[in-house]
Amino acid sequence: MTTRLHEQRLDAVRLALRRSGARTVLDLGCGEGPLLRRLVHEPDILRIVGIDQSAVALQRLRTVLQQEPWAVRRKADLVQGCFLAPDRSLTGFDAAILVETIEHIEPERLSVLERAVFRDLSPETVVISTPNREFNVLLGVPRHRHRHPDHRFEWDRQKFQSWAVRLARRSAYDVQFEDVAGAHPVYGGPTQMAIFKKAPDQRSRSRI
View (cartoon, rainbow, N blue to C red):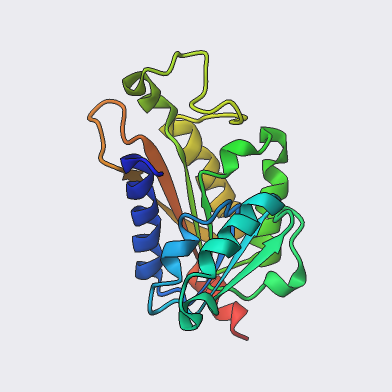
């Protein structure tokens, strides 16, 4: 069972993918596949690979996908593993998505994520969503706590955008930001999203 916020978050990522024109997608840290199960029904998406370390989560996702028609489930491949050390077979995809994923990674390992996603995989589009710490006060989350006990950090908008802009510059991407599920005039949205697009000169080089 998903919350309204989670549904809005998934819809925001799905719309970002539609606007990007992506036809092949990597779902990094897909879990039980709440977004992947939607994306297989997108007519413009031809292939989606879900990657997660949890064998249990992937088996649950497989069970759900088996109930779909062959024409739908054939789009999806599931890989157990860590996307921080990606296989070469995962290069060449149009887009990669990390939905509420980065906050589960130790901050000192974000440089590993940067190298794996933006340099090794190097998709045309990368979509990253993460909680907005500023909004926690409206959710009743105490200042000294995170929304989930497994979160290694939660960033406010300034911190997230600063990190994303520096990452984009180092990796030759452009980046835009969106508030997800509305935007409070003071605290912003409950979730924040960065949409990275490979810079035009880099896109032309990748086709050579």
